[in-house]
Each structure stands twice: as structure tokens, then as C-alpha cells.
Image (tube, rainbow, N blue to C red):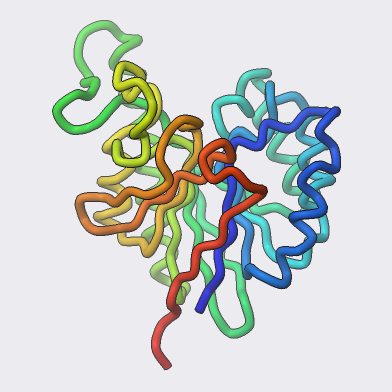
Length: 243
């Protein structure tokens, strides 16, 4: 059994230094990897990223992360990414990482993702240039996720996980106002997951949403925004391949 700890939307700032570290230090006893599903900082400043870095450094389990919209707010995502990577995290955007737990290979493909909505009520590449670019950006994120999942084919992973900030399905948005669903996720992410294949999809962003969902192709989706799971992280058990 492969144990996947995950949390998103921790929104750390200087005054929250040390609040998650005691819980994170228990991870080697209960998990094989920690996934961070974006919105790790409040405003995306390097100073806030340094707070997160100190929380996750030398935890004894691999850490894999994507950034969220808050982590882009200060328009320095490259600096935030560099600080987290210096602390040992794999920070993904259209990329994949393979980490190990004993003999097991855990493959994680990640992207922040973006909005646009879901089948039947979604934005289209039509009209003003800004609207077309909105949807094209979402498509680029989804294409990056698809490519990263396909890259995992060469690694013969025991489990494959799609890690995003924005949601791939409306199921895990239940509890949020329906009017803002288009700003919380996109069906294009689910299409990428279903066509490339994954055992689990993890996201954040929807603070008032619901933990459990599923893509139309049957992939389990979990909203791990901290306000939803109500704890420092949640652990999901995934069966590895049979011997």
C-alpha cells in the first residue's frame, strides 16, 4: 500500500511559521510522499515562500508541489519555485516527478491549471482576444498535465497521481456558489487525466468545496484544500501493483 499525504491552500505568511511543522514531522510514520496542491503562500512573495520552505525542509519524505493563484499574485512565481526547490521540493508545472518509497515508484504529474468551467457551462475560444487567451491558457495547462502524465509511462510507476491547484471536476466544488465554478476549474484538466491515465487526482483552491469526486473516466478526485480537510494533511492509501 502506498500512502499519499496531501494538502493545499495553507496560505502561509511570516506569523504562521512553525504551525505546520510539528504535524509534518510525523509524516515518515504515516506517509510515503507529501503533495502540496498550491496556494502555499498568501501573496506569492519570496518572504512567504521562505516560510513554506522551512516547514517542508528535511521532512524525511519526498515533497511534490504545484503553485496556486495566490503564489502568482506578486508576479514572482519563478522566485517562489526556486525557494521551494532549494528546500528539496519538486515543484511542477507541466512536468512529472518520480519519487520512491521502498521499492515502489510514485509518479506525480503537475500543473497549476486554470478556470474555464465544465461541460455544458464552459468558456470557449471565441470573441475577444482576452477571452480566447483565457481558454487557451487553460488548454496549455491541461496539455502540460497530459504530457507530464504520458512522460510517466517510461518510468513504470506503481501509482500515477495528477496534482493540480484548480479542480478538474465540478463534484469537488459542491458547497461553492455555482456562479464561480468557471473560476475554480476546468473540464480540460479532467480530459487530460482520463486520456493519459492516473490512479488519483488531487487539487485545492475550492475552500468551501467537497473532498470527494470522480472524473467521467473513473479516476478518483480529492479536494485537499485545508479548509475542506480540516487538518494539516490527509493521507490516501493507494494499492501498488501486484507482485
